[in-house]
Image 1 (tube, rainbow, N blue to C red):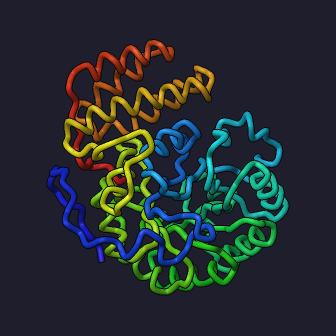
Image 2 (image 1 turned 45 degrees about the horizontal axis):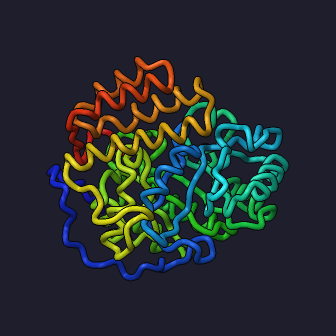
Length: 367
């Protein structure tokens, strides 16, 4: 079952039936989570500044899980988590589920211990990363080549973790093998899984096969989070209703429209985010203006958390990721690349968004 995204740029959400309830059918984080959309762990993007921005668009009283960037279990035990950019966190952040790469018991044990003391509410194991560096260490998607080995990594992590352990993985060419694999992960003690239904060979190419999410959801007793090709609130709602998954995970599209969380919340009966009234941005022009406001807010958080050189690199990467949804995003990207300081960047944002900007519902990028 592959649902092709609508081709129209119409911003009105479809008249879908209401979700079965505001509570999740299968509880995540012991029932702490009551909102069925979450942010994906993304290298260079799922950092404290972006999490703070996205949280500001989460509907009032809504709770979901929040990732970190991928963390290497071999390096993590020796790092100062209050100074390492990938593990910086705001004092009021909750429901944090950091993601680790690893396959050896001692580094995993030490990493879990350190992350729980840091404030982790759960631990996510990456079995979906297809990059060469991860594969060379038998991390990431390499673990999916040996189901028993992968299950043992989960058992080891669960044994040393006082908080729930989840697994993020990709599809396999043989669905029966995928079904057996996820059952092994469940039996090893995983509290939920996240499935990005593209194979490692596909990376971001082609379409995500949402049918595999539905099939996996039907085989498991634990919650299943679906991931892949969510670019709009309509996509998130369609994945939830069409596959029965417990949460829908969005990645790069949230760098363009973090208010997607607000849009989904409207459809589910949540109140607007704290400090906001009325409805979420919905027209191309409203979204274009909101993108400008979001980037200015993000820049403030970068100033607070990152020294200028690192913060500028991270901000430019963020703009490069999200700007393709903007009609003139290439111009914004060029302006951000030209800026050398936070002040110059702020001036470029002010100049660009002084003119009306519009946002497209979708891009050719897989999100």
